[in-house]
Image 1 (cartoon, rainbow, N blue to C red):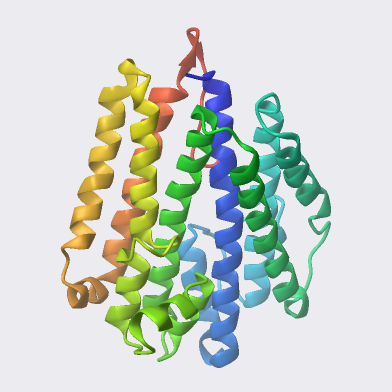
Image 2 (spheres, helix red, strand yellow; image 1 turned 60 degrees about the vertical axis):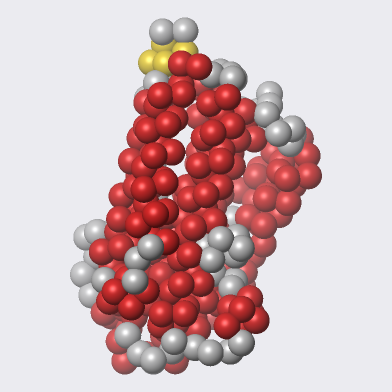
Length: 309
């Protein structure tokens, strides 16, 4: 087992980079929906901020959304803050991170906008943010040894991906309008794959089924939960002391997978907020279990973590 401070940093690098990409996807989906129907801008903006657990903003506009979720240095959920936190964690784990991966993170941080920008520039920035996260993922897959460091990095990304996809799916239930599912599918990068899978038939149940249950699609909730469980299983192989706690975390993931897999899709769509909230609760609980087991101490030295370090 690698040092807990290294394991922790790898885990949070994975989460923060994934959160930056998925926040960009959420923002692009929201802005696309506003173009199609601008009459609900204030309510839709408030709903999105609530989905992202951002509070204290009254009557938000799309300008407020960009400030809070894209470039605000003081908002933990912003893309800027995610990359800054990823870089801080990468510095702590510098001895185990490949040079190319460090340069990717460091360069991205240096290229982040130093100030605000308007809606006209938003799409270009959000595309760039998604591309940088994709570059990070490609470099990591091509250069990292599949050791514990890789497993913690992958575990962080998988848990964050499942959590954020659930927020994207939940956004379909609060956006309103007849065209929110195509926009959500595009936000997840799965619109073309969905059309091929369902032969162009659009309805709420089939779109929800694809984004929640189709394990073949890498951004589905089921794929993220399954991959996270696989990472936990591999981490427990050579660590007898962690097998009990790892099993508890895997049990929670397995129970959630069974709940989603055997749910009636029409009922699931009818209670989408509740079901997606359950996904977020389980990913938070698993994060807490992993944090207590692997990151709580190293040589009797406490190492404190939190959801937004």
